[in-house]
Image 1 (spheres, rainbow, N blue to C red):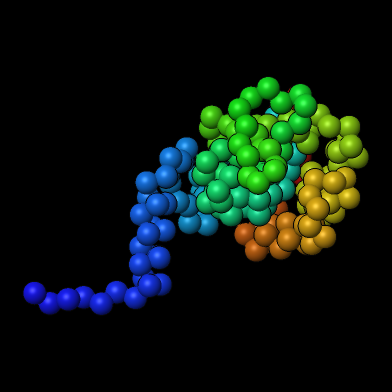
Image 2 (cartoon, rainbow, N blue to C red):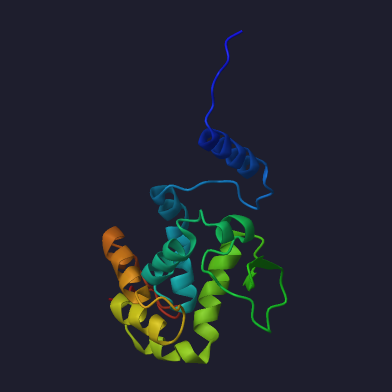
Length: 183
């Protein structure tokens, strides 16, 4: 019988892969960038129509916060926006280190809560004075209003929006009380 020599790094990788495959995950699907965008851009547009949060912003934040839906938080808690637990949160939670994050039953719930979060928090009210097509203003406003601590957050959002041309989605905004498209 021939003996196969396996190096220590190979053994470690195989161990980690077997652990990952057996882990209890809420969502075992792995998304490519195109698959993720294809699956969730309609949700972002629907949320834009419902709440006035630009679809370009929603998609860019989801991609940045969840790594195209593949981050630990997205996979195990369906949380695609890095939304943390607040005192008013009564749903399930998911912890990473000392941080408490909201846990959702579905990704759709995550998208809806993200839109509601921005729409109902008074510190984001100034964003709704901007045009829905002003993704740069929205990006810098989110950073200024404290959505994220990363000093490059706004420029990262803008880069994603411009890379994927997400601003096209914002021009699809339809006001709830009319049947005409806002431009």
